[in-house]
Length: 143
Image (cartoon, one colour):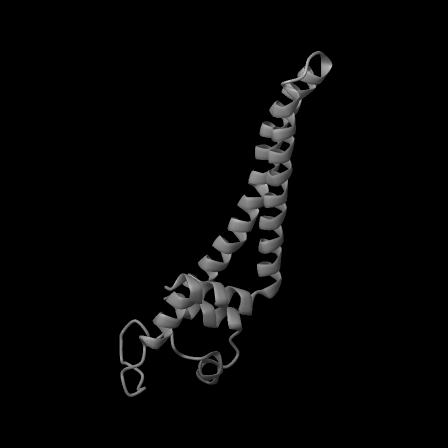
């Protein structure tokens, strides 16, 4: 499928999840920007002497470690949201394809041995089996 179409569909069908995904990406980007600024400032402090140099080393290490540790989960959650929605789209597409494959080109229901017993609605089954429950209906569909 087209990625642009998936993105538009994602934004239209799940605007809340789309917004949360964007927010997670923005937060991850902001964390990386702060880490880069701290890294640059730490590199500038390396040219100094004494405690400022030591503070620069600590700042560089903490910027690298915390920038990675705190930004990666935000990006991962944003991508997980997109992944779950794509799984839902693909699952729905497969179900739609399965439903449409039961009909021929002019809309007539195909006669197939796979669908004979399983296609009886509960209401029709109930007419033929008075006194039976919905559990009996589902049990008969498994056979």
